[in-house]
Amino acid sequence: MRPSGRAPDELRAISLEPGFAKHAEGSCLARFGDTHVLCAATVEERVPPWLRNTGRGWVTAEYGMLPRATNTRTAREAARGKQSGRTQEIQRLIGRSLRAVVDLTAIGERQIRLDCDVIQADGGTRTAAITGSYVALHLALAGLVERGALAALPFSGQVVGVSCGIYKGVSLLDLDYAEDSEAETDANFVLSGDGGLVEVQATAEEHPFSEAQFGELMALAQSGARQLAAAQRQALGLE
Image 1 (cartoon, rainbow, N blue to C red):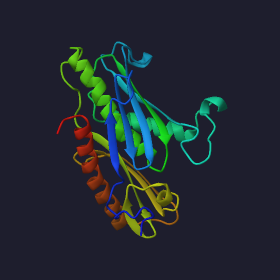
Image 2 (cartoon, rainbow, N blue to C red):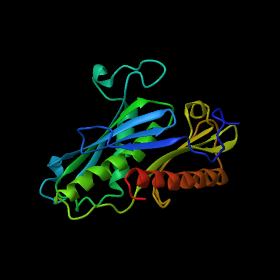
Image 3 (cartoon, rainbow, N blue to C red):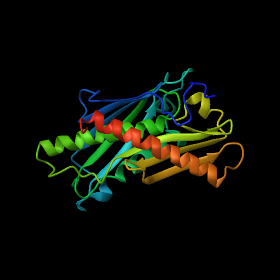
């Protein structure tokens, strides 16, 4: 029934390649099927002005899509002179998602900036960016621990992103573009590695969805989150 031939509860082929960007303190190329996002972490020994002398650090993100990430060329936002509302919303989501699992006091007055660049888009770019950014951030913070700049990794857990939706009346996990573009309901879930909720974005594209249908989407997202968290640990050499 799915255009890809996948089962309703089946993720696309997932690949998380750590250390993809040579010069970044931490990086990961996240592949969710034909969606490819390069996530790179930069450690800055400073914080935004409003955090100076507080003893707290910050984790933030920037997101962008390359002009030929899709089947037609999209103009660079730099050429237009401003970011779109969609770009701003996505990069704020990525930053919030990562901060949810990091002890900002433990990292001291440092800022870790995640650059998420979509090389190729086939749906679910924000969720791929969140999942890959956790790997990049983990590598960057592990480097600080290795150098003695941090006593221990400041994570309270893992964080992943996964999309779900209702397509032709059926609840599906990890939508690709063919499904997402025609979905009756579109949802993005950000979850901890053990399935706890960090953020949910769910929209009825055609008509309202029921509480029971939302429960189906939630169960699919939690199943996908467990698989993605395992892929993160494998990429980091933790299992």
